[in-house]
Length: 174
Ligand SMILES: C[S@@+](CC[C@H](N)C(=O)[O-])C[C@H]1O[C@@H](n2cnc3c(N)ncnc32)[C@H](O)[C@@H]1O
Image (cartoon, rainbow, N blue to C red; front, side, top):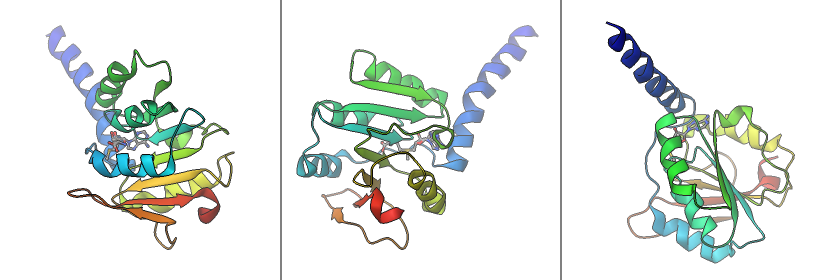
């Protein structure tokens, strides 16, 4: 009987936060990487940069920034995806993955890029969250697949078989 209770406890411990992340931000879905590579090459992400991924999923975006020399921090609320990113980044001194709800975290002031792939219905909440952070106006935001409503993007990156990648500056959304 005990093992049923323990399995149920572990199962719900893994699944409940994962489901919650899907409700308050977005469920996990992979970003198609070609458009991200194109954008990162175009802006010239380098070792001078710090990229934050709001809901880092499997850590693929962090890896793309890190292999260009940038430091990266990913926030992830799903324990399953957190473990995937932790395994992916454990040998990478430039990358850290933090378990938890990014809405309760403070974005470091030296952040130069923010990445997100979140549901359009949460975009206004994410916008006001980012706008209140102690970060520079010049920090750039990438939003995969969904634009921030009512704000004209500085750039829209496109690549074959990928959704568009919208780019904004923090100044634009404040
Ligand atoms: C659509 S996936 C994007 C993953 C990754 N950024 C990428 O582009 O490949 C969204 C991820 O955000 C996570 N997430 C959603 N809301 C979150 C929140 N409030 N705090 C932390 N993680 C969140 C989900 O668990 C999911 O892994």
